[in-house]
Length: 421
Image 1 (cartoon, rainbow, N blue to C red):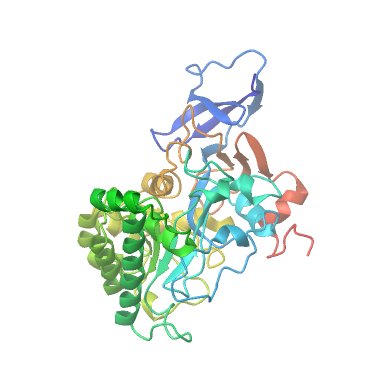
Image 2: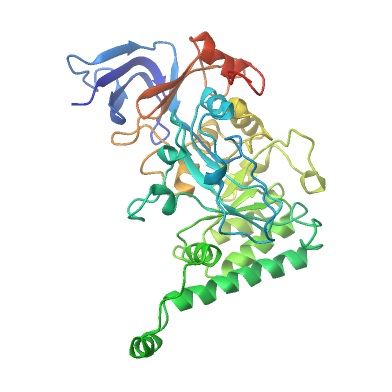
């Protein structure tokens, strides 16, 4: 019998339904049992009751673009290197993970860097406390008979624009970049045909007793990409570069069962909002570029999320940590609101919307019965500059508690806060 915990008295923002005043969130172990107003949700006898009156409860935040975990996430093996994975660079005990928990994050997409046209596989992490990264992986269910990391536990990082230009053998132009990306995709198509040849070819192979193709880390990952099993997270800023990404998706079977694309950054997305909406492609936006920026971001504006949303584009908000500190993720939502995005849309863009973009919305992103017990207790309204994250719960366990001085250091200290370094 799972332990029952009832958080009572708070204003609750479930995201999937309107806010609830004087609400109850009932947890049964690592699962949400019920969410509703006091009097509507029965608190069972024997449940541990935690009074959070005057507080605000929101779902655990989902960051679709992060580089936390302490690893070196730039690799230079090849211009396109789809076989490498960020999972092998993650230190689960790194202080950056605790700092993200202090910001209310419970799910993140950790990405390789954008210095390559195809930088490698991303990894979807559940920010639980553990020393073994395999215990953090959010994988597609039923995709592997072996260890979790052998399944599909992330997407694929791609990039265009200035970042992947000019380093040794990298392309010196946008047309060279697109050419090399097409070339990689075509190799993926050839591999897919070899793995699943037409019926007549299969018959001939059986008659000849031809061996199956040998495993190929790069080519097999490209097949997953082309089959829509591994979502493409595409770093792209300028309007023309975004259009190139949309074109690549269309050329290589974009849609529900093919090349699935999420545009990341999309700084000039507002210029081509209708084209993005028509393509049905979501955009994950960081509204600021705190280290300084580049030519591609000169027209970045706070109104970008609101303008894209108004055009019918599904949006998410991201940190790109360490570009923006995960502890200030809610400030990103506040800046988007300042730019004209509705508050409920901003909260959705940090919870349920990004969860849906990586096929996790049946598990996280909103406070609903049956979903994982991931939630954040705030001192006030989600986007007030005065509001503090007081607690972060992941799978029914408190992973950050500001009332503990040692944990509070993760919220207030420097880069090594709480890490003992």
